[in-house]
Image (cartoon, rainbow, N blue to C red; front, side, top):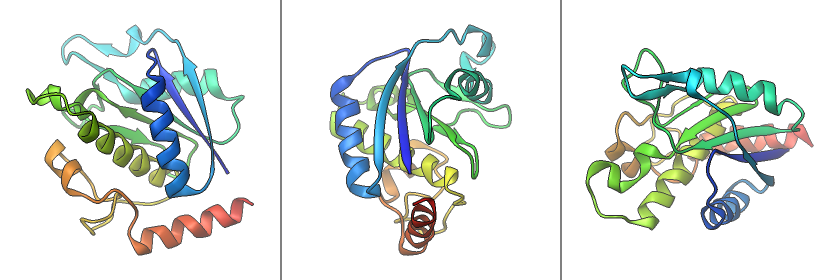
Length: 179
């Protein structure tokens, strides 16, 4: 099983290296990193001041179909789906693609001081969460599980940073199937 972390229209090598190392420890799988430059202006809603994540995923699917394995896009722009005011991420359930927005994960977004450790923990949780959906996991009722649904940043901070025992069993079973 391979996971591709793809930064879209930004580069932060230190963050990507730290994220890759943490994900390798937690998931015990191969992780590659890539950078992608694409124009997403057609996905921008001037009324909302946000980008439509599903359209971004569709555009990236066309450009990244040659990459083998799961693909998680990391973007800095604020994203949404029509039914919600904003989202932290979106994933294809049992699919290969997911997107995580860093915009609302930054403490500064909420007028708080910069805190790189809080920011990193939030990114890690949301990447693991969306990857869990790719592996077929639904939202979990366990607050200590990274698969618990987060409707706001406080809930991201409250939930755990790893999968609960039940979700971990499902993921481990699926990872073994791939090999």
